[in-house]
Length: 62
Image (cartoon, rainbow, N blue to C red):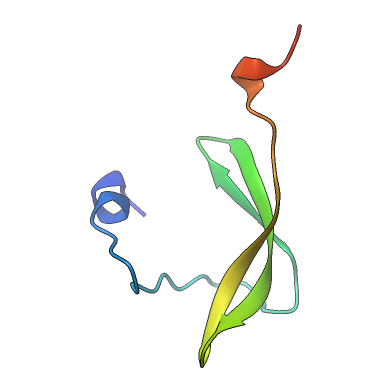
């Protein structure tokens, strides 16, 4: 997705991912792992449930 598409998202918008629903997935931006997730549901829709967030590299000690 392009940045302008992400900024244009609204509550209830759906983003389709070409990913098997039975496999965990990584949420990555700019080659940085942001979180891990698992497939879930929201009503009749398939959803992404955040299972863990990655630490902010700016806050990590050298």
